[in-house]
Amino acid sequence: MAKGRVRSRMELREQYEAAEAREKADREVHEDAEGEAEEVEQEPAEEAEAEEAKAKPVKKKKKPATPKEPSKRKKTAKLVPKRVVWVIYDNSYKKVKTFPYNQRKEADEEAEKLRQDKKTTYFVQPFKEEITQ
Image (tube, rainbow, N blue to C red):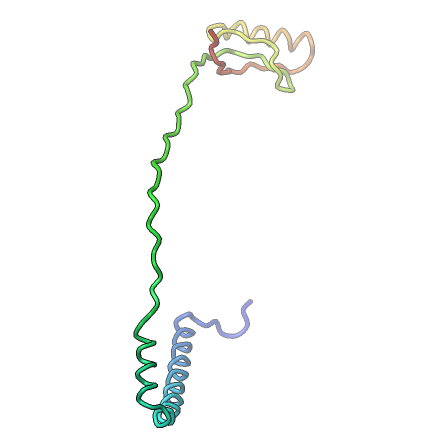
């Protein structure tokens, strides 16, 4: 469990801003006191040089933009014609035998025959295979 009071973000932010304002006010008081002492010591020529240095910021030259090459189109994969067949699989999911799609009944009968003969599990599932010509 949390110990003590849980502070909200709004309260924390208000505290932070108040502390920041106090620090800023302190800095201004110190700068005013130091600034008055320095103004007496500086000569008019030095002030002009300081203003010129502040007025001329150094500009960096931008490099010209390099033209982008047009992106190459991605080739779409060729659609390979497929057909559905019935496949008899064993327990380790190895293909035992395949049948055309319209011979589902024969595939089921063959799977049942294998189950009875070898006393292991065989099952039939559809499979999409590529048509080779």
